[in-house]
Image (cartoon, rainbow, N blue to C red):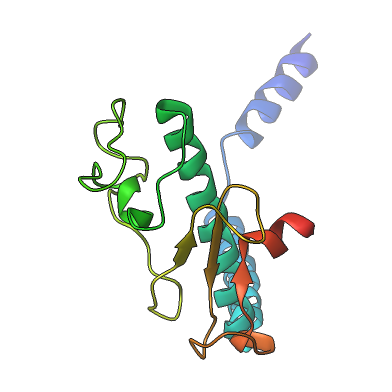
Length: 157
């Protein structure tokens, strides 16, 4: 019985927590991993901006869908993206516009190249509306980081 209590007592002492050395090793490993990830991201800033633009467009699309759920129609081209953060005062005025708007921070985001996203309703490429950014060059077309980022191309993927 004495041996059993010694075994249990020593097991309890070992389960107190991590040693300082173990914590330092884990922090060092996490630091190395973080630096590797940062290098990967820093090597491809154009891809990161394009991805952010795609995510912004999906967020805006979801906000427009919420707008339609509340009001039974999408904002007009003239009302544009502002209709997501301010109740429209021109065109068809929504009766059930959500107080506080449809975007979390109450701000229409700019694309990663500091340009406005473009909106057309009804859309040409998409039945309800088209939403796009012209990319880094700010002009239609292009390749790589200059390529247009659109809601109709995102839907095709």
